[in-house]
Length: 368
Length: 255
Image 1: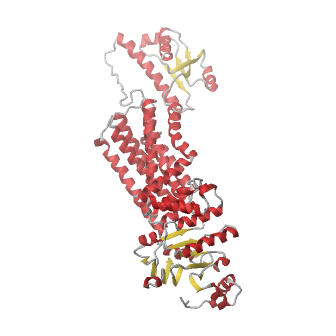
Image 2 (image 1 turned 45 degrees about the vertical axis):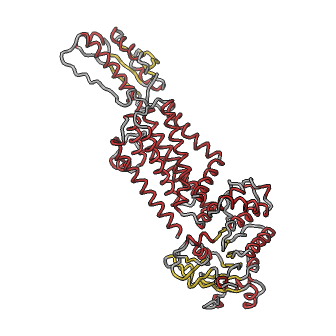
Image 3 (image 1 turned 120 degrees about the vertical axis):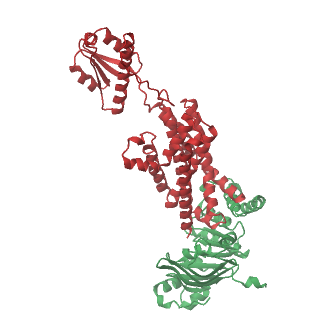
């Protein structure tokens, strides 16, 4: 036990003496959180639009006011002819043009039908989709309200409610995502680098000749990084909760336990990486590219898995972060207990055991 | 003299190690006596490292009877590891730990008590003249000091045998001489020294040397006797003669 404690103390010395790494270690989660929180946002606000009103009547004016007072849009131009539409789009400030047909109010009163055209700049497809939906919603709302005065006999009004994230806040999505990303990066990257460094320096040989057992060496490497990654997890949760208002509906203890499980999984990945290479650079590349891209792209963090081709969907099932994100979202947003997420938890446990077994085997083979 | 003292501390009989079809160690047999400085020479790829790894318990032989410090390399590697020290050509100290922290760490992994480590570390640091540098990071010390410290750390837990794998590579001649002073001192204190080296002049400091060629022991004797047998001026010439004329290698080397 004394041997082992001495080993762990040495690991902490390595970590705390390397100020640069330390800064990355603790600065990265905070920087990532702030970047994702403030820069990347799906919410729209003050998008530039232009309006081509060929009718100029009370109804078009009311609809225009309603659109502009929503806070989502900002009127850049009032157009007077359809020829100008192309021009303002090219200018770049305007992302959407709303066109009211001539004699809008009269047509509406006479036939109960009038046309409004929404033209969106789809060179940014996501934004175009989003703002056209918003605009349609606003106009629909106007129609519903005016119909309430003289109701039409039959009407079906769908009432949409976004549960668990009523305001569709981006933070609810990225906090679990960042957590999955940071924990994997820190844990796998740092362990794999610290093990390969010992190999490069030749100290690993000394350790192997010493009475320390391979399992003690591995656990001695894992313990400090578990502690650091755990501190990171807590930092992210606190930032998410206090700065970005992401709730923790479920049990905090369960949440932390799941984080711990995921950290162990990531550490075992790091050990696996270090068992296939003796070189710090290779270990770093493997950790960064082999882990980071799948975590970002294939975990459902940014791109919905449901929209991917079937083959990619299958690959996604193999990604540990995918399951972790499901777990974290369930606990934080839905307040789910272990009864709802035992399957995902079991999958993570299985993966951890698998990776650890493989890397221990490889570690022993290397001794031969 | 007691009976056990006449037992060789390392006993190797018919050691064979194969990697697939490649035979790295072909039927090695030799003894190393307690307190002896045993030189293990050979070109790169002659099978030195493979043999050392087996003796240190890092690798299992394909066949043969080998005991180190009285323990069997097949089943008692844990006991072997507790009784040996090891130093490689990389000196293998942690650059970001201080002199004292390195000593404490290595003492710790060999299961020494805290008090033992403390008293012996103070004495050692004083002996090496490093008292002023006790809390200096290893990374900022000159190479020669690191090398001496690495050797002292390797024998800090007072092992029965210390294995030195090319301990003097890349070090200047003056430091090498001082280093051999430390080796003699260790041998004088009863520690058996098993050393591999590239420098043939160093071979002449050893009590006995073995020369490996292509996985086999080509010659084994005291340096003086080897020079006489092969009629050369020094060990270097013995080595070259053996490497160039495999016909000179006897089928069986007398232990």
